[in-house]
Length: 310
Length: 308
Image (cartoon, rainbow over all chains, first blue to last red):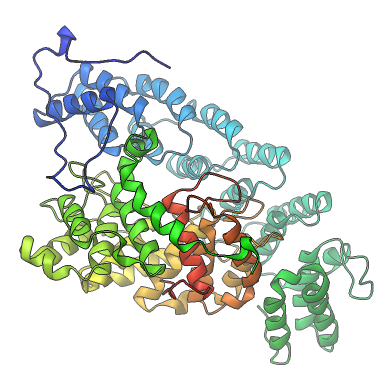
């Protein structure tokens, strides 16, 4: 841990009269205990904020407070204001942010701050490497993936390179739902209603299928596959042969994926004269392969007579 | 009843009461930015456990109002900047304590002021909401705005149709919702979107069966719920997932008994409080969502909860 830093005996701060915390009166619920170091630093921050000071020492002060408590967003806000007032080269700010973000991986403020800075810089250069280092710590971190989406949109990075990177993330962990979502966002998300070319559709369906063959019970590629089929307005029967690789209502002991049974139930429900097969798939799910959701499967069975599917 | 299936009400009440006296602990000041939220969570848990009077009503109101700024927004603690998240907690606390009259007495035109603060955070172009003047946007803030405004009776101050259209633009290929268009479906964000739509009276735009199927898939074999596919279970999703299912009238699609057993296993039977999963450290955030989850499951000893 860094040695404690105090301001009252620092000549560089001798001109500042610190403003102590006002707990808002003598309310027992309000009083807040701080360590002395944090309490003092905050009292100096209040003082510089009261005078609207923008200076290098303010940057150092905010850095110090953030190192103690990165979730205090007032500090971030004032730092951003100071940066813009001082016209500090923003690349320096990013260089400082990188290790800070790595230390506080689930913090909201850091991401918003970063987005503000990169937006002003007008270039995503270096961001991809930074994101990779963040994801090495937590490959499903929601902030990181949201930020990546923002970068793609802001700088129009719907590229093959981005797709290849996403693929490498899926290769690393085939159950990373965030990576699957990012792929969907890249391939189908640019324009909500546009349907991609047949070539791309085939590529995507094949991609999800090959992932499922590696881990048939993995929810993410099944959601992706069904989402893609729906998005490009293909009937669910498109997936019948594929689902039969993992489950067959005639062979109730050889089911390798409950998701395949789910698909088959939908396929048979739409197929003329196959209602009994659909019922059998749903029964297998309710009784054997996914009994925790029995009520849901029963509900689906109830829909069969009405010719409706989920 | 076996010990692990019992709800330790007295211990939980004492735990929540003790939160404010733990000021010598490092964690206390590190969570200062959540103080008003924490107070709301603790207060709500106490109410659900039938011990709403375990915190002094006047102290709670005094503290909440000491966080209120002239602009109409609440900060996390006195002297902290105003933000949507604390404003929602502030309004929820006042509503829980039936204290809007007191607000008007101490802050003339207080309700309108708060309502206008929230309304100013709506993005006129897209319809969603920012958390503060700094501009971070998230469907959490949209829900918070709707929740607080409906408690204040001031929902007409914002463009509800535009906000609903924004939520519709967030729907994903799996039927769920994220923080913004295209962002991964997450149970917490599903809750915010579904509940906001319920407040707006616009659940008609939800693909109920598809979304509820995704939500019910969150239940794992151990009974607990996760927030996203292929992630670990966590007690707080008992609330996000279950309340969404309840709003969609599909709560019975998950196994309530197994979930109740999982939640009860997250208790600290000695010192009170709930943790994210069995054996971890307890905190007030997981405590309120565990208790609220039990409320939705109609567990004896917990008041029933409105999912929205």
